[in-house]
Picture 1 (spheres, rainbow, N blue to C red):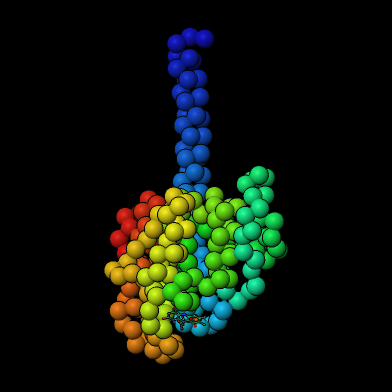
Picture 2 (picture 1 turned 180 degrees about the vertical axis):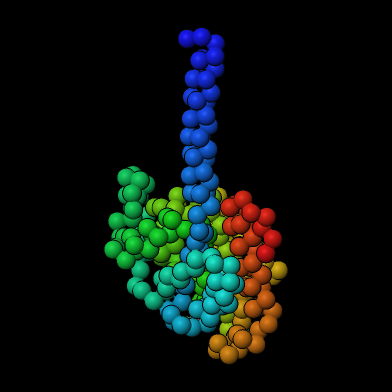
Amino acid sequence: MNRRNFLKAAGIAGATLLVRELAGAGIKHAQKRKEKKVIALNGSPHEKGNTAYALSVMEEVFRKEHIEFEVIPVGIYSIRGCIACGRCRETGEECIFTNDREREWLSRMKLADAFVFASPSFFGGIPGTMKSFLDRAFYAQSRYFQHKLGAAIVTTQRSGASMTFESLNQYFTINQMNIVSSSYWNNIRGSQIDDLKQDEEGIRTLETLAKNMINKLKIENGASGDY
Ligand SMILES: Cc1cc2nc3c(=O)[nH]c(=O)nc-3n(C[C@H](O)[C@H](O)[C@H](O)COP(=O)(O)O)c2cc1C
């Protein structure tokens, strides 16, 4: 092969490689820029109660920015707690009590980018049902949550919000998750939904929280993050 033909062949091979590289990078870029999804867990036994209202305040902000948002009402079901049998750790698989419903939830959580753990305060803590779910999910399948965004929100009639909030944050901080914060500790207060609607500071806190979560999701996506 003379010098001219060699350079021509090298040019074609180089161009082909470059096209392949660019196509690969494009696919990776597109995969990286997939639509973001936020999953909220509602720990209340009332599917449409105060905690659901608090989540609806955040949902409105997410919808405006076309962020997919789904609420899983864990609190309305009967959920087994962890019995520390260690089986999940031995096998690296799911908890022995995981049923079809929970398995389906977890399969969706595995694909989510961010989480909102929403809970009423029960005697200053997380209601047993939600705690049972979180204990088992984070003991057996913590990898589904790791390195993702997490925010806790709490509804109270009067007090106990901070303790409940801190308890929810424990799941994030033991599992290398990135906590999203707001301008106050995320709590909205009142007896009925109409009372919550009067809690302007609570509503503002939740809206700011949703905006901050969107910003973090956008920064991860390579955008400026200005929301
Ligand atoms: C068993 C139980 C315990 C509660 N403990 C507290 C509490 O410690 N502090 C508080 O402010 N409200 C407490 N409440 C009230 C609820 O936390 C509050 O009304 C919450 O907003 C209800 O949310 P939901 O409508 O989504 O269920 C308790 C309610 C129940 C049923």
